[in-house]
Image (cartoon, rainbow, N blue to C red; front, side, top):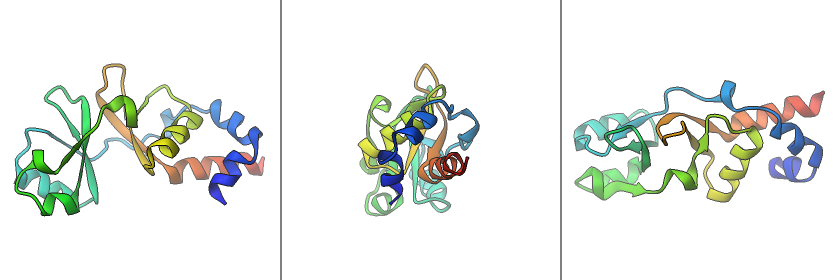
Amino acid sequence: MFVYNFVGTDRALKRLSRISIDSFISRPAPSVSETSTFENTYNMCQTCRWIWMTDENKVLTGWIDRDILLKTSSVKEAMLKVSYKEIAVSENASLKEALSVMLSSGLKTIPVIDKKGMLIGEIDMNVIEKASNKLNEN
């Protein structure tokens, strides 16, 4: 039903294309460095199901799922390395662009990056759904 509301009405998609994600970004996003110790990463994973991974320059490099981390002995083994170009949106993106990345990647939460690929926050499907519902009410 949710996807139908977006895809079924071109008008809603056009409206989403005019709304910047800037005010919808959750900051900061849960993250650790690739060089983080196993213990530190494990502790971060206690408060969330997965966390974003960054390099020493805070550039997004992938993520770690808590369940996978518990089955390994190192952060590098647990990390799913992915180019930020595949799973992230720019801080200047629209809600429509964020939705498109979510649908194409299969993720309900995606990272938001700056021009250099540095992680600055995240945005999730619930936020876009609420924004869409408000647009449909008007």
